[in-house]
Length: 161
Ligand code: UDP
Ligand code: MG
Image (cartoon, rainbow, N blue to C red; front, side, top):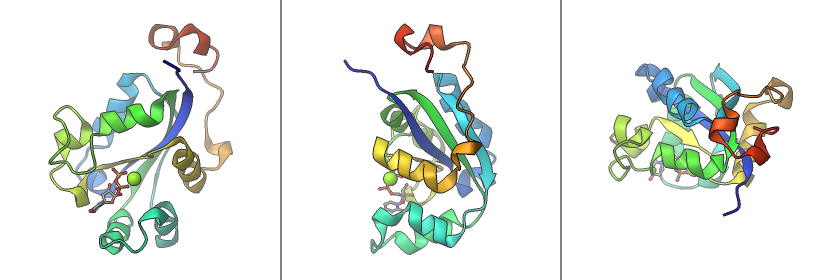
């Protein structure tokens, strides 16, 4: 199976920040072995929120989603790893926490879709689009290597993880 080195955008949503779950959520991705190359707490303004969730414009939940995501700070992250877009979605669990498997972030920490504690990009294309909304390239730590890489990823990625 082809393995691809990717980046993804993940955010700890305002509900999780309020509930004191920042560390719990970051930990899930960190212990999996993904490399954190961007990390910041920030208050999202309305224009940025609408840009980020542009695909949902016009849907019945859109206005509530925008007011929720701007209701308090988020913790924005860029992760790098093998197939990290899909793998981080697996760690998060499905959108509706009632269907999310136990052991996933949403399965363990959330009860309803409107307060599902974490965001993660759903494709490589949306990941790159979302990273560009929240981070300048200069804010990303792109050149460091996790020394665990040879124990976690294939050797062909050793200089790249
Ligand atoms: N959402 C909602 N009601 C819905 C569908 C989605 O409140 O019926 C929210 C939910 O917080 C979700 C976000 O809108 O995380 C974005 O929806 P999407 O379908 O992109 O889900 P995700 O990619 O976050 O799993
Ligand atoms: Mg989505």
